[in-house]
Length: 140
Image (cartoon, rainbow, N blue to C red; front, side, top):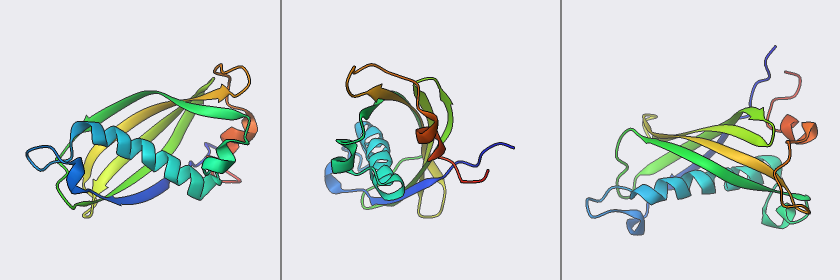
């Protein structure tokens, strides 16, 4: 039976300073929102806040982000971002992210590839089994 991934969720409100001249969320801010979502969610769901990250013996590195823009995000709009680890390939965690508006309509998606990096060697290494397990429901 396939393991059920744990879905992380965070909510954000678009600020004026994040807008382009047409009052839409500017392109670069989508990447920032998806990145900040993962870090906020890791602190909330896995206990990996910034002080804890310094003690873990590894780092994470976003190797690649592929963002698909579906609908514009406007000023002062509330958005919810969800994400989950779909699978692992050696040092890479394949993470699917979805940004939705208050009505639940998808406004953007992101495929994020995140590498596990040994803090001592600073080289990508396979995600250890115990770390892989924390991204999936127990018993599945």
